Length: 159
Image (tube, rainbow, N blue to C red; front, top):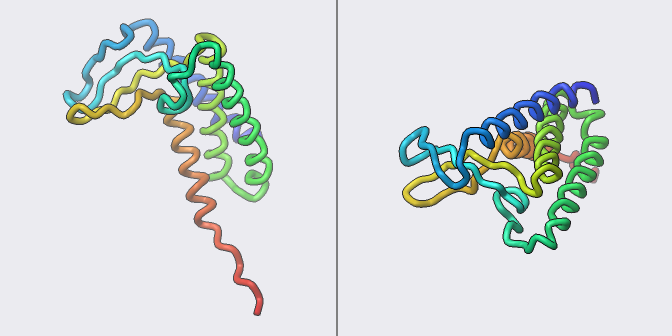
C-alpha cells in the first residue's frame, strides 16, 4: 500500500497546485489559447461527475454527486484489495493514479461544491469537456487496470 501512496501523493499535490494556479490566474469561461484551434486553458467549475456528467442537477441534489464519488472511492478500495496482492507495479501504479485523482476531485467538491477544470481540448467547434490533472490520472489509471484485466486469460476448462 505504501507504493500506491507514493504514486497517489504526488498526483494529489500536482492536481491541487495546478488547480490553485488556475483559480488564481484564469477568468471563468475565458480561454487562453496554448495551441491555436486545439488547446486552451479555460477555467470551468464542474458540479457534475467526470466530463460534466450530471452537471445539470439542481444544487439541492449535489449531495448525490458527492455520494457517488464516495461510492467510487469505496469500490476502488475493494478493487485494490483484490488486485494489489498479485498485481505487481502496474496495478500499484494504476490504483495510485486513480486514488490520487479521485481524492483531488473530492477535495474540490468539499471546498467548492464543484471540481476545478481548466484544460480545454477542442477542434473545429467541438469541445471535449474541460478536465484537470486528477481527471487525467484517473483516466490513465483506469486504462492501465483495463489493460491488465484484458491481458489475463482464464485457463481453459479441463475436458
